[in-house]
Amino acid sequence: DGGITQSPKYLFRKEGQNVTLSCEQNLNHDAMYWYRQDPGQGLRLIYYSQIVNDFQKGDIAEGYSVSREKKESFPLTVTSAQKNPTAFYLCASSNSPGQGVGLPQHFGDGTRLSIL
Amino acid sequence: GQQVMQIPQYQHVQEGEDFTTYCNSSTTLSNIQWYKQRPGGHPVFLIQLVKSGEVKKQKRLTFQFGEAKKNSSLHITATQTTDVGTYFCAGKNTGGFKTIFGAGTRLFVKA
Image (tube, rainbow over all chains, first blue to last red; front, side, top):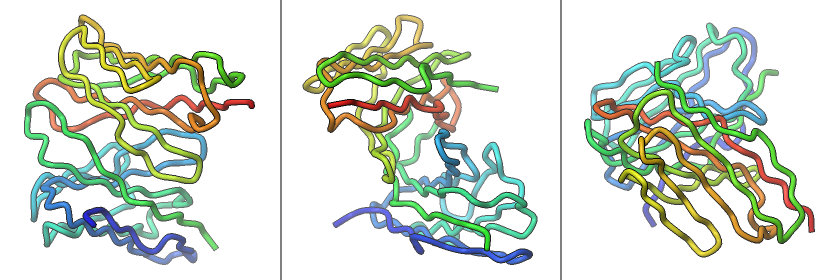
């Protein structure tokens, strides 16, 4: 079945530690996205990538980094510079929106990150 | 920058009552999308509206895109307990790349 796989489902971070969240898709989508969701809140865009080897900062990129070396993969690293990392992290993908009409995003099941 | 505002933040209804959530953008949108997120789950795409004044229906759900393409609404007729969750609108600027999500409306349905 086609879809988006995020791992791990739960992750705990120690002070000063970098952690990496995995996101893999087999939908052959060009565009991939990372969102952060805090309890009872909406989705805030961290980073997005429209094509392999290219990515742009979203609205809350500070303390995060990404790479897009393969079309299928868009890992997110939460660095020690992110002082409040506890949140629900969602990865999504879509066909490339280009500059025309946006296209529906398909979401993974998410990773819940907490500080130890 | 572009903002997408959604109201209300929460709505409690008795099962069988109707429910509406509203979405407003500070800029003209090329399209509006609606998603539903069940408690503990991830957002799931419901529908996309593209044309000015467009109205689409999915069973008890009615989606509307304003004439100026700056606002949208989702109306649920005769809510059921399975409608519980958070409903998000998401809009894309004309000529832009990013889709901006509203903060969502969380629907509670009492049986």
